[in-house]
Image (cartoon, rainbow, N blue to C red; front, top):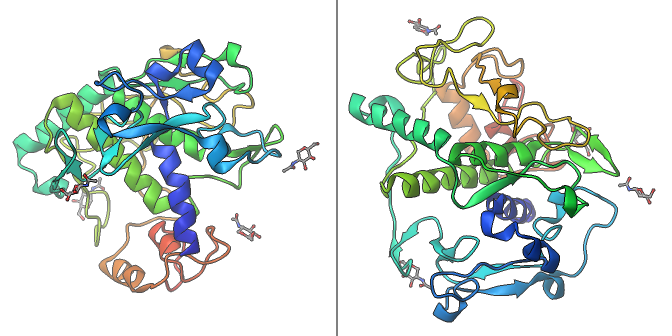
Length: 341
Ligand SMILES: *[C@@H]1O[C@H](CO)[C@@H](O)[C@H](O)[C@H]1NC(C)=O
Ligand SMILES: *[C@@H]1O[C@H](CO)[C@@H](O)[C@H](O)[C@H]1NC(C)=O
Ligand SMILES: *[C@@H]1O[C@H](CO)[C@@H](O)[C@H](O)[C@H]1NC(C)=O
Ligand SMILES: *[C@@H]1O[C@H](CO)[C@@H](O)[C@H](O)[C@H]1NC(C)=O
């Protein structure tokens, strides 16, 4: 239960984590307020009962003075006032619904069905890859990325206009970059992996991408497909129709969908900049993929591996990292190193 509470605390803050474009004005930073007006012209839709602009200083007090990593105090490092949304409402301005709800008043349950990618018809597969291509090139209306390294001097802030997919990729990058303690990175610590946040954080990240793609395409029933890799000898979806074939160096076949995709950030030990390459497109790196060559996970899990993981009754155990034994979370991450899971 304790670990569950921790992971919820971590993940809820990160997923809404890039900067709402409307909250990047001088006034927003000066007043440390990110409570945008909703359609009813009130902050956080408060007149319509959707939420309220909450003062988090009074609520949680001051925090964590010995660290200087902005993520440990998100979003308080930037804003003392943000929207608290009521009931089924959600989003930085409470203009959206919580995942799983829909409708003007967010009072209808929303159920979408995620399917195995190989079970989609050729037309559905084609639609999926064209949606992804669109997400990779469509600028996000709602969010921007703060690429500046020095997060303590507002006058140095530089925001990058990024595509919907790049915002999603950036959130992943931003959370897994090692923790900054007194100006140096501790590469043993990572907010997204090798710890209790792993499953919940990634689930929320994918829900975010799915929702953004639903809004972008106005296809409200769009569902991300999944890959059921149980019992697979190799990556059988690494074909040019699906994820793409690659050469020995991991370069994707130019005739596959993602071969010309570039990552907005790669590497994460830049001493002072979060993402120095973000606004220099020519410097961005091509995607590489070499399935089966990760030393700790040389092969895909078998049916038996999955059954054994599901038998683990406890979500996580101390020390809550990759050495934890009998931990469902650690087994899910594939960190049990071939030991009986
Ligand atoms: C960071 O530096 C300050 C001042 O030098 C020190 O008091 C503090 O213990 C350090 N914090 C950590 C986590 O190392
Ligand atoms: C949230 O949605 C559920 C399911 O439709 C509904 O029963 C419930 O009343 C809603 N909650 C609020 C606070 O509107
Ligand atoms: C994966 O394995 C199948 C049969 O097990 C084989 O036909 C296919 O060529 C392999 N694909 C790759 C990319 O190695
Ligand atoms: C896991 O946590 C233990 C206890 O804090 C620590 O000694 C060990 O170095 C950690 N292992 C890794 C790989 O971070």
